[in-house]
Amino acid sequence: MITSETPRQNTPSPTESRANYGFALYLASKTAFVVYLAWAFIPSHWLEYIGLTYLPQKYWAITIPVWVCFVIVVITLLYPAINMLLVPPMNDPRILTDSFARETINEVRPGGIPTVSDLDLSEVCKTLYLDSKNKN
Image (tube, rainbow, N blue to C red; front, side):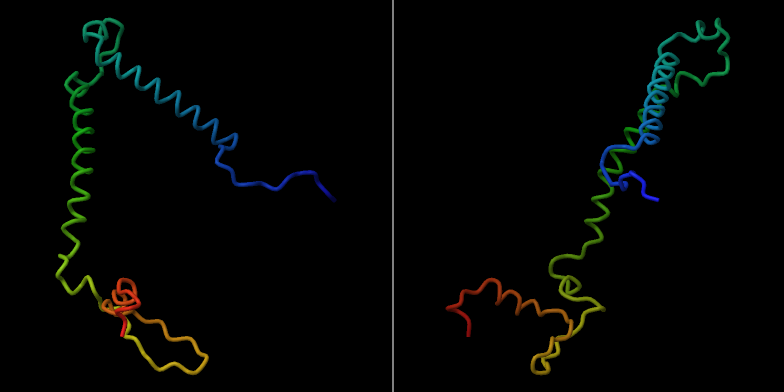
């Protein structure tokens, strides 16, 4: 039986179900933000008058966003700093080689492919940066 369905393609546009979930999440986040702003700016006695008595203190309306901003700043500063501390200095031999390096074996069969190995840094620099006049 032949069907006229086209094969499914990968596209950047969302599928129907993902679009629906995205729209629902958009509406939920906007609603939560409006409720947060109402809780933060409406005086407590008005909220108690309409029956909302089990709300957190207004202190948390400022504290949580400040802590979130602080954590974001600390992460953006701390993560690169830790990475810079973990990189060895430029004169450290660990930059040139490590325990997994393979030494070059010059024995190659005629017409064969050389074995996989690490290249010596001085040979790479000679090949890349010396003019053809300076090569011996």
